[in-house]
Amino acid sequence: MSFESCIVKLTSYCNLNCTYCYMFNLEDNSYEENHKNMPEETASMLLQRLAEYIEQEGLTQFDITLHGGEPTLWPLKRFESFFHNIKNNPILYKAITLGLQSNLYKLPSTQLLDLLLENNVSLSLSLDGPKKVNDIFRVTPSGKGSYESISHNLSFILDSKYCSLVKGILSVPQTDTTPQDYFQWVKSLPIKNVDVLFPIHYHYGYKPWDNIGKSEQEYACSPNLGIWYAQLFDCWWFHNDPSINIRLFNHVISLMLGSHHHVDALVNDTLNMFVVSSSGNIEYPDYYRVAKNRNAETPYNIVDHSIKRLHSDSGFQNLLNLHRFTPKECNSCDHQTLCGGGFLAGRNGPDGMVLNRRSVLCYDEMYLFQHIKKRVLPTLEVTPNRTA
Ligand code: SF4
Image 1 (cartoon, rainbow, N blue to C red):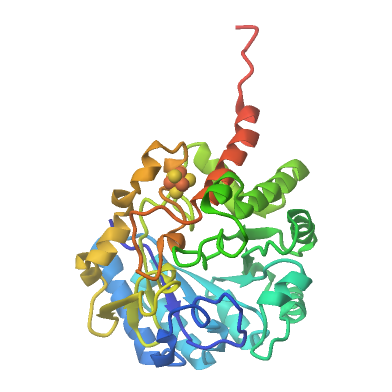
Image 2: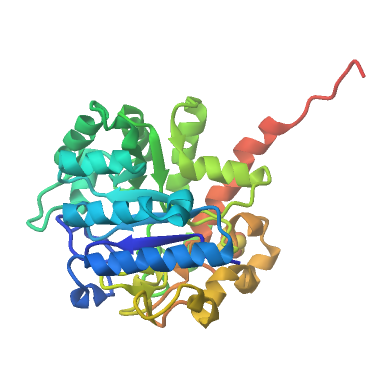
């Protein structure tokens, strides 16, 4: 089992201050000690380490997501050098795929957009729904909503020679809006490729049923988030327009049909990725930093340690072999192969990450999976061939 992707934090600052941001506004404050911008030498060392690892492991593909903070704030000269180093290393050039996750609050310079285009970098951006809801959560440091600026910048890019850069929108739907209104918003977007994420801020210290006047038993019978996602599924399913891709739903359906591909909250049999901070520290996935300060830290950094060295770290070994930690409650669950214990962020708590306890989003995920199964499976029934 090898690592196949990493998230690289090019910056440890941002021009937005989203209320639920796990980098700056939840429990972890390690960003305070990191470099604001990843130094050029650290980025260069990371690429050397990756080339060495890709060759050792015989990998044909390795995915890098450029992340932050806000990665487009990284100095242009460093982007030039980073892409130059990839182009000039045949191992990297052949294997690396690049994505950049931006809030798109500020339009990147045309020089940066040109670089992204030349280097086949796909661009994803974040919006959480219609303006009135998005602007409660995705705000500037002074509290101003971000929606108008992001929409304007997205339209500019889509109407320009850079349109092929845009891969899709990542969205943490806020249940302050109805699923029907949210879906109307999806239909109105200029790009209809939306990845609906499960919220990352629920864990054993802050459960979905806390503060809403429901006991755990009541929530298990009527899980608010699961119901919201299921209603959104119905809007999408009955609208029946294949040009609208809500990635979570398409993934659940393909998993029900036999795929085994792990994405975000699904399958959870292996997590073969690591994070590199702007100071070059190697960290566990961001799910770890949600509930406990410095919980994503490891003793490794990209200057002193090879990536192969991570294989002997017990934390990474556990993530690479996540299937060994399937919670015992899941053994009798109909959705075990689809879910594998649930969204990893929800297995966290003030006591740290406990891989073999099921996610606090279990009730919501179970409700959604059950609902999708009920909708989809009857459509797959084969009509007997009467002429045979
Ligand atoms: S839905 Fe719940 S019980 Fe079923 S596999 Fe997921 S976490 Fe486990």
